[in-house]
Length: 268
Length: 226
Image (tube, rainbow over all chains, first blue to last red; front, side):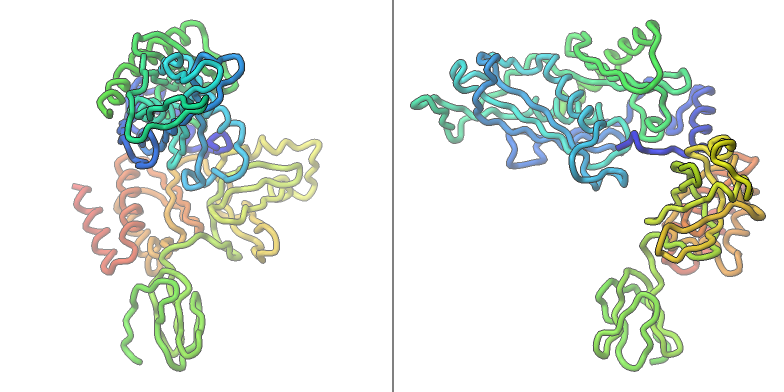
């Protein structure tokens, strides 16, 4: 994935020189994400789906909903699993086969943002306690890779789950039976939005492109919910963040996140 | 069949039939000469060839290429030369024959991500092509901007006897190092000249298949220089 990407020295110098002048290579402000567009219902057979375009990064998310046997320790809650994969058409460096560690991280960060925010009220997704619950499976496929897959997957998944329809099930002889043609709205409580920031030469920029991603010293992905609270966080890269930088990043993520949440809301 | 014009062909398309020699990018099927690639057919002096419009770069001996150092072992660097093959740059090429992997620090000379202008020394396709950076105008590139175009459009960018590239260089006051592999480094003292040169190169890349390209580029260069 992008972690194996080598940015040439000339580009690196150019990005660093521009940052010192307060500019970015694509002309954005430091706290300005790329243009986000979301299309809903792009996969007709899925219960919910969304295509998120963040600049030239594109992710398609699909949601399947089906009854499942619950995990033994959470028999009173529904199930939520988010996955992610990078398709070979997304980037020359992407390969088929078992997922590389960065791809595993991508799936886990996307999953954690949605899970820890409590976006879905899992208690409402129980058909019969300890026997059968509703499982929500959100699969992300990266179809174009231009950096910051974390946020693109987060937006696509949130939009897809927000717009999905839950089929109605009834317990008959201890087995869930689908009632054809009847759907309910998903039990949405909040809309989690992740914002990824890269630290390059001491500067913090929101929504790094693939080139910025290739030369960054450290990155942090902060997910906030509709109330403006931080719900999940992931730090990567070899450099660190100072306390002041962390607070600044948290504030940035809430500020930028609230604008993005509006776009996700309007997409439904 | 005299006066046959160049025409766009796709793989599998019959270009002509009869007693012709099937040359570059064509095969003979029965009596027909068939194209194997997307390109412009060229029937000339009893031979048929197709000038490619798409495709990657295949290293040829003596080609000047621009490469990006991707890694190194104790004996050589490997460079990404925008091809399915990677360029091998032996350490002895930089340090001389008395190179010793224990005393010489390879990353001090060339590190990951450095750009080099190199020449292909040996590309026999049985192993990765050998490249060198010893020679005039070769070596590490310290300034300028990297531009990538399709390797098939490099001849178009250079033009007849270098006419196209000379026109761009002189009217934008910039220097362009062209790698046959489609990587170019454009440098200029004047930021506007740099931008204009890159725009001109992008125009050529986009419009490489049309006629009168020189006039178009000239027009574009002049229109913005006022």
